[in-house]
Image (tube, rainbow, N blue to C red; front, side, top):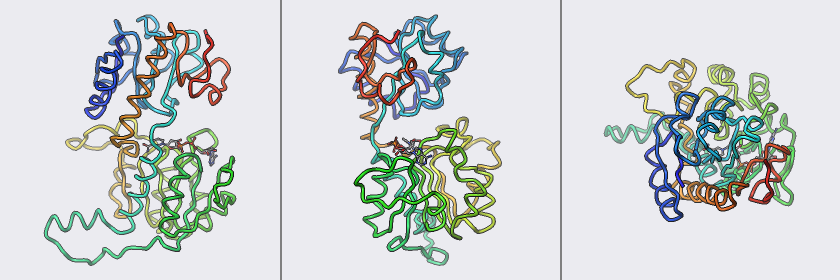
Length: 346
Ligand code: NAI
């Protein structure tokens, strides 16, 4: 079976070629993203494999169906780029529900330590044989309070890491984790008491701009904000204002609301059109990484393994259903995860 693989990066290929080779799945790699103009490239293939910034809207779905594509295999957990209701009756859609929560939690911790101990500044200096310590005074984590918004897989692992540093943990989640030993508080209280705030909840209409000017107003002066979840959880304009007002002590961002046309690309020879992002990056107390939290050898291996297994189970079932299918008929996506649903959906 042949899979058209869109938005290919060099780090994707090795893991997918290895995994596909073992399971009889051949990938046709395209660097371009999937959209209405590129969907025809999938002609002759049985399925497409897409990532977070590929467009799987109604027009693209219609073209894929015309091209004989039966399955859209997302190699990500998130699926906000897929029109699931339009896909119903036309193409099946599967995703990778979890690959390595440790990758993202550890990246969050790396950003926090880098920022608070000025490692990025020290690295630049010593490479230039500048061994001065002036301006590198850090802040300790021990005894500080971290507020974790969202205590799912990643949030709980990050809480464990913070506990190791001797931090006090408070959290907000509408669905508290039972027997986790985590002290849950209201969001307002979390904002008020935390020295470090880390976002680990999904992006939904409810959580969009969860951190806005009003929320920042409730935070401690000098708070460190970590966002490795989704860019639109934070109103970036309000964040910049908070930094300029010296209210936000530091910000570490692995995601950004308008990241789609910027992140994952080498724009070093270009003029950055996004003034807000350029201004944030220019701030001495802001660290930006370009949606890198997932990027570990272990996670890439698991993403390839699950995606290929999703594809195999789809074709092995006679194109009826597959593992990790997103069920757009009943809308009960959670209940259909993990290959629990085996019946024909359409
Ligand atoms: P999860 O589904 O295990 O946990 C999410 C938690 O957020 C749940 O406990 C849920 O109850 C909670 N939640 C839902 N609505 C909330 C609200 N309004 N306020 C506070 N909490 C709320 O998800 P997981 O695996 O821990 O991932 C968390 C997020 O990390 C994902 O949604 C995704 O946006 C992001 N992510 C980032 C990656 C990166 O490379 N930077 C890679 C993978 C995920």
